[in-house]
Image 1 (tube, rainbow, N blue to C red):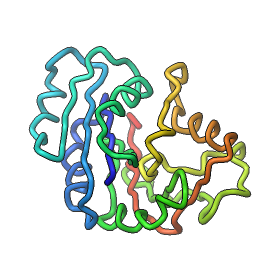
Image 2 (image 1 turned 90 degrees about the vertical axis):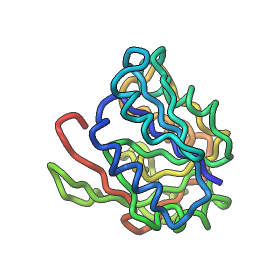
Image 3 (image 1 turned 90 degrees about the horizontal axis):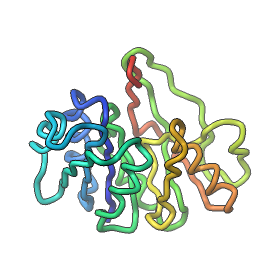
Image 4 (image 1 turned 30 degrees about the horizontal axis):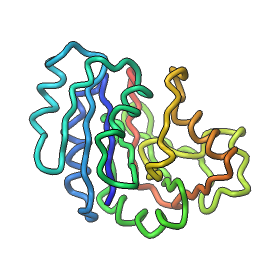
Length: 196
């Protein structure tokens, strides 16, 4: 079973596409936690997200949380399962994304995939694929944030890091010799726009 975390500050206008890409996954053993942060209590953004709440989708009003790292650390407390996937609200998954990653999640600590940009850009970023044990993480961030599945026990974001909080986590885990793997397949679409 996989818990999916979707923290939202900006980008609520994209929520239908991102949530539907989860609902329509061929792999059905998931729960979704949506966390609205940086807004006033019971905000319009929270009310918009609340429309998606059901037995598998939990929407949290994190009005006291500031920043993505604090929000993720709070959301992880509500997760039921031992594997955590991340999806930014302005991105979406291909329908077989979780199913294709599932065979690898017991062999590796972090499993990612390739992605393609869309919106203001349509490039495919170059990232290393396969087992990343010999890759130097100081060269660049090799894990697409919205593609990863990570063991829950490793999920601890540094609240002092305002930007690139995902890369900081990967660097920390790389230094601890955790095992990384990237599927050589585009299973995530990453939206490029003015707010991203």
